[in-house]
Image (cartoon, rainbow, N blue to C red; front, side, top):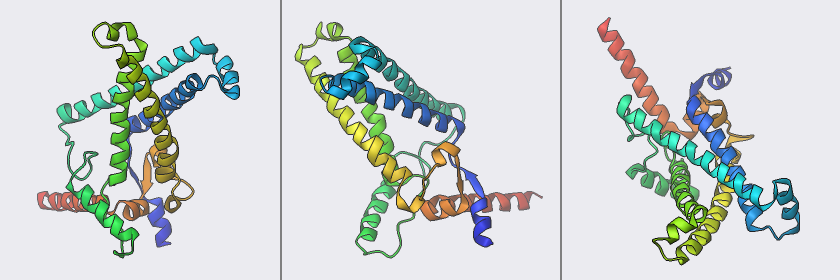
Length: 244
């Protein structure tokens, strides 16, 4: 009965904006991957059928650029929200609930390695975001800048070649392809497995879609966050008691 009550008690982990942006970026990223690789491997038999379905070479290029703008608009909205949160709402972008790397991330990483090699009995006490979640976030955020800049070079080659050597366009094309290949491997496979489908969250961690997690999940996967939440609740209760 106690376990059932623990599972039924839920907490809001992700806001509506965060969940919506995640879904939209996932759609945009998938569209970029399909159209990008359809263009890169256009000589492969099965890809020719896909290219025809997408409107040929011109159709693929147009769709790829559409998904590029669509995805990057979502990234810009996310950045604007951070400014709004910091400047208007006077929120903090640092601390235990932040996505910014900190000293504790290195400490928990080393503790996690020791746990993997049986040098530690319990896993480290992760805060709201574990070190691998921050790496995942920043890999995508920084990678989007690389993809965006190199994509612009290929979109407007005449403009950039007017003041830069022509081989910069070729270099941008090379970087764009390998960055895309790495991004697809990391996001569509490693990210999905490590975050959503890892065994300890069987059958799947859907909190980024529902926005909610149970009390048991917080205590188990993010004990540091639960400690901060408990301390905050107890502190609020003490203040309320003193003022009454």
